[in-house]
Each structure stands twice: as structure tokens, then as C-alpha cells.
Image (cartoon, rainbow, N blue to C red; front, top):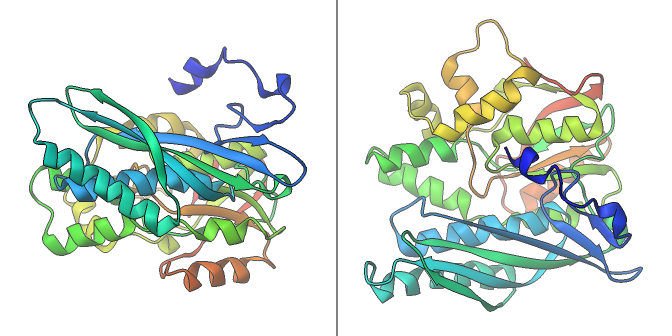
Length: 324
């Protein structure tokens, strides 16, 4: 649907300084100012995925800023986007949402310099996030190369945990795990931008691991082999997935990427749903050459991403995904 909506949009070719537009389904727009600087601009907002207003603000802000990091950029400021049902929620709830977003921006070292608010039937919150990057260090999602290895920065399973939360079935320890992963800023993207051996970069969000990996494959015209046993999964998500918790977006994601994916004959339904699980503020997915992979993992580990690991490889071939 998104592809159809954008099919008649003007191409970036008409604007030579627009380095990244809508053509590659990338994480943010990038516009060159001069030979040393380019602006990274993105926006993201959504409905609450948790009940706590402060946590909602933190998650939404982290998720929005992630797209700047995913392009190799350094965030410099943000604008807030807020919708509240006036007369239905107390002012304090809106204040807590904003405070959560401000806390994350403070951790990222940036101000919220303004924004826009509306009266809306349901609460929504997010950011316009602005960053800077050297034009030669922009990391796109369509520049991967054959023989690259794939590294994932965070565990998957946030959507499944959110589905359990909505039904009152997520335990406190699992909730805290969910909050910890969704509010962890993808700061390694800044250091990764300086590595020539990092060829492609994206973050895993609403289209799930398979959906965002397929964007890399399709844009780079490469085949992926994904080793399921090595994919980091949030511990609570495995049990919940086996118990049948799933989001509707997972099935929509599979409808899109399924024709391009080959699963093992004994692959369980819950495992497939986990790979298509929509993530909020998910991890960075890196395609880099073999020699650079140890340095990439060092950067992740040094910045607190303990579960970051290699999950597969890319090779010449049809842009499909093979799970082993």
C-alpha cells in the first residue's frame, strides 16, 4: 500500500542535492548543504503502545530519533508532534508524555525546539528529528555488497510483547525488558558511519526483521541467508510467541515478504510470526564486509548493546531471503 501511495511522487533526481528521497524506502531524507554537511530529516509518531504516559513518550521519541542514527547521522534537535483528546485525558497525562520525550532527547544531547499539537480522538506522540552527516558517510539501505555479513543490534519480539500487554498478560519483568530495549538509543549508528566497510544500514521497525532485510536485498539486488538460531530474541517474546500472541501487522508483513522468503520445512508458525513481528524502536541492521564485522560488534558492545551479533550473510542472486 505504501509503495502504491508513493508511486507517483516526484523523484529525487530533479533535486541534485537531495541525496536520499523516497526511491529507496530508506529511513530518512538526506539533503546536501555543502561538501562537508548534509541534513538528515525524519518524522515518526504513533498511538500509545503502553499505558504509562511517560514511558510512551520515551519510546516514541527513541523510535523517531533512531532513523537519524540509521542514516549514519548525529541528531541536533527535534520538534514534537502531539495529539490529545481534549476533555478526555487530564493535562498531567500530556505533560508526562512530553516529559518522556524530553528525557530521551536530553540523553541524545539535543533539545526539543518546538512542535505542533492538535485535538485528536486518541493520543498520538512523536518527533520530527533533524541531524547532520558528512555527505560521504551517509548510510543507505540499498548499498550492501555480495559476501557482506549481517549484524543485528537488538533482540526482536517487541510487537509480541506489546500484544500480550494489551491483554494484561505481560509480567512486570518482561515489561521492564520491553521498556529497556525500546528506549535504548541506536547511538552506534554515528560511529558506524565512519567505517567504509559498512555498506548498508537500516533500523528494524514496523516491517519486522524480514521486511527490512528484504528492503536491503531488493535495493542491493542480493540474496540473504538468515541463520535463525543466531537471531537475538527478547527472552519473554519466545514464550509469548509460542503461546499464540501476535499482532495483525505481523500477518500483513508476511503477506508482503512471504513470496520472497524460503523457510525450512520444519519451521514453526510462531517462529515465522516472530521474524515478521513489527518492532518499535528496534535495532540497527548492518551489512558490512567480513573484515569490518569485528569492529562493528566492538562498537555495539561498547555502547551497551550486549545482544548484538552476526545473523547471516548476503550473496549474489535473486533478492530473496533463505532461512536456515
